[in-house]
Every structure is written in C-alpha cells, then in structure tokens.
Amino acid sequence: MTRTARSVFLLLSLTMVVFGPAPQGWAEEARKPNIVFILVDNLGYGDIGAYGGGELRGAPTPNIDQLAAEGLRLTNFNVEPECIPSRSALMTGRMPIRSGLDGPVAKPGNGTGLSPWEVTLPELLKLAGYRTAMYGKWHLGEQNGRLPNDQGFDEWWGFPKSSGETLRELQPGWTPEVSPNQPLLEGRAGQSSHRVGVYDLAMRPLMDEMITERSVAYIREQAGSKQPFFLYVPFSLPHSPPLPNPKFADKSKTDYQNALREIDANTGAILDVLASTGIADDTIVVWASDNGPETLQGIGVQYGAQADSGPFRGEFPSAWEGAIRTPAIIRWPGRIPANRTSNEMVSITDFYATFARMAGVESSIPRDRAIDSVDQTDLFLGQATQSKRDHVMFFYDHTLLALKWRNMKVHFQVRNPADGTVRAAGQGVVNGYAMSLNYPWVFNLENDPKELWNLGGTSEWIGPPVAQIQSRYFRSLAQFPNLQPGQVKPAQPQ
Image 1 (cartoon, helix red, strand yellow):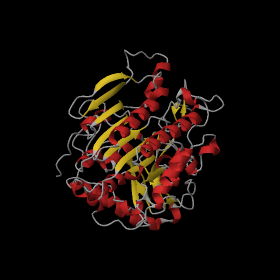
Image 2 (spheres, helix red, strand yellow):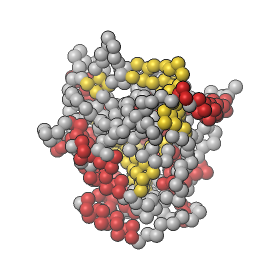
Image 3 (spheres, helix red, strand yellow):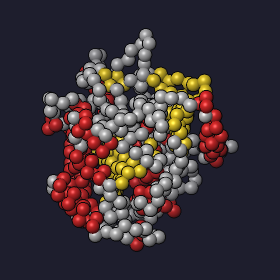
Image 4 (cartoon, one colour):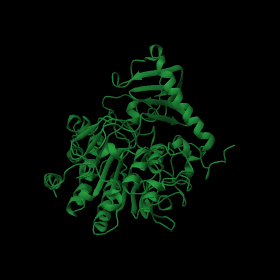
C-alpha cells in the first residue's frame, strides 16, 4: 500500500469517529489496543521532516512525517543521556539510577543488565492478555536471565549490545580471540536464548532490514488474533557506524543521509502492514529516539556532520537539550486527535503508566518500589492540554547532571568533548570530560533553547522549588533504596 493510499484509508477511518471523552473503564469494555513501539538509536531532534529536518538536510522522511500528521507530535519529549538508561526507563517506568543502570555503557557491572526483580512494561502488559515480541537492539543485558525473553517478551531476535562494536574489525591490533564480535541471538519465553549468527561489519548495513522483515511478519501473524499484542522495534540506525542498506546507498548523499532514508522506508513498511491487515485503527504506534545525536570520527566512518539536534545544543551522553530532547510521535486513529502538537513535558518513563492504564492494568503497577512514570493518557487523547509532569531529573553515572522544572533548566555538572592538548577520535562527549560547576547554571529553555545565557546569578528564586524536588527524591531512597549495578534486589532500608 502506498503512503497516499494509507493516508486515504486512515482519513476515512477518522471521519467515522467523533472525538470525545472515553468512558471510564473503556480499556475493559473495548478491545485493548495493540502497541507498536519503534525506537531509533541516536537520532537528533532536527533529523526528520516533521521536526525541521528531512528534505532540508537532503533526506526526506515522508512516512514518518505522515505519521506525525496523523497523530500527536511531542516537542518536549525527554529521554536519558545514553542508550542503556533510556531503555531501562522505558522498560521499568523508573529513573534508571533506581535500577543501577544510569551509567556509561562500559562501566563494570552494567554488563549484568536489567535485574529480573524489575517489573517490565511487557510483563505488565502480559497481565492484560497481551502477546509480546521484540526485534532489534536490547542493550539491557547479554546473558541468559537478563535477555528480553527473560524480561516479559514471548519471543525476540536481535543483538544484546551496541552497533558501534562492529567497527572493531577495522581497528589496528584487533583479533576475535581478544574481543569477539557480539552474537545475534534468538529466544522464547521459558527457554534460553541461543546464538543464530554474528553481528559484524558485514551484517551492519543489513540489520534494520532484518528487523523490519521480522516485525512485518509478526504483525501479519497477529492481525487475526483476538489477543492484543505489544511489538517493540528498537532499530539499530542511525547509531554509528551509520551504514545504510545497499538498497539506499546513494553516492550523492552521505551515509547518514542514506540511513535516514532507510529508517523512513522501514517505518513505512510497518505502517503499511498495519493498514493492509486492517488493524491500524486498533493499534497505537509510537515513534521515538532513545537519545540525541553523537559525533563519531574514526576508521570506516565518513568525516563530517551526522545527526542534527535542531534548535538545541549538545550530544549524548550529557544533559544538554540536544542530548535528552528527541522526536516522539504517537498515533492511534480515532482516539488520538490527528495533526496535533504539544510542547508539554513528557518523559520516556511515562509510557509505562500510560500503557498500563490503556490496557486496564494500572492497578498492577508495583507499589513496593519507586515508580517515576506519570500517566499521560488524558494528554495523549486530547482530553487534557497540560501534562501531569512538571519536572524531569537527569542522572548519569550516579551524578545529577541537570533538572528541568517547568520552562527552566538547572545544570549541576556538564559534559564536554575533549579539547586542549588532547584530541580523541570516536564519540566526542563519550571521550570528553565532566565539569562540575561552582554554582548551578540556570537557563530559560523557552527563551534560550540553546542554553547559552546562564541566569543563575539573577534567578536565585528558582532554588526553593528545585531543592524541594531534590529532597523528595532523596527521601524516597529511605523507603526504596536504589539498586546498585549488578545487584538483583534492593537492600532493605535502614
């Protein structure tokens, strides 16, 4: 089905719907929605057309742009400073520092991944009768017991860690005996995941096509079922190295531009199968990025600009807006009003409580731990204009980097690329340094989205509300201590 045909199909569906408040208990009375969650890797706020990029930067994204026109476009969507923390937050509805997963990728202990003690989003949805599947990047554990089929997914296929590891084949001195390439794994609930291939440099350009093929096949398989499904599609692109499938290798464009075109085509394939199987109206589609862009230089990577953070500054892993504010689009025909934009504050953690309510299992959200997720159902459905959230805290490596409150942002530590006498190939801020501040930097994000004008010296009034938010967090630790990296269960509070 073409994009135009899909648009007509959805438009006809929308004309038969009168938007209004959903009756209380609608999740039990009506068919529970399918959920398809597409998460791209390290895409900047300004990369796709719906957020000011697309054709402007030589990579049109018509399918993603159409998705935005058919749903809700969030312009104040907040993720975490890096891949693992964002994925942890999505799966648990908790700030990743609570799960011991707020640190850098290479930190000892993080290799153990997400604790089985956590109650994940797919585990919660299974209580509502959902079938669950995942195809793509996990990055929350690489050993049996910590893989997706151990954390609520009925089935999965993909890779456990980062696509960046595929570049090791080009590095002087590397041998597989010293550091083998990561495996491709497949698994089902109740069984051990097993190796089905290797994720090497040759596989890198083919990965997202294979993720898409499996996702499309799963949707076709589930379309006739009376059970709802949750399909998590964490694509590998445009994470470094951003090597596009040969089908998109246009030599007049950069690899990154071609990767954006491939992401759009793969998104279109998933949207097409939802329409052609007749379940688009019964399916919530979320399209988002796990964190902001990266600068990558080195062997096998084209020199020059890659991802674009749009009106913001910075890249991951940091708490600058360019790192933690990303595109997020939500479509549910007949429920979420089309062609709508909201600049209300939303966190990636919020999908946990929101989907729990939409599935009718909000009463099953665990109460024996701190849950940071906020139910944004009313905002998403257009029944409220304001978010239920007024702040987000950004931790990294057990340090509070920044805190957003309303339209203000307070930085306590900033992370910068390497400079001075040291130059570092690879990812700029990853190989940079952390700088603690004598006094917090304060920015008015609406007036100064690039965070260039520090108002700290003339905005001391912001101190009390920010201190109250910090105090609430620290008080919560007395009742619900944070997990430490590698810890299975939290220690008993003293």
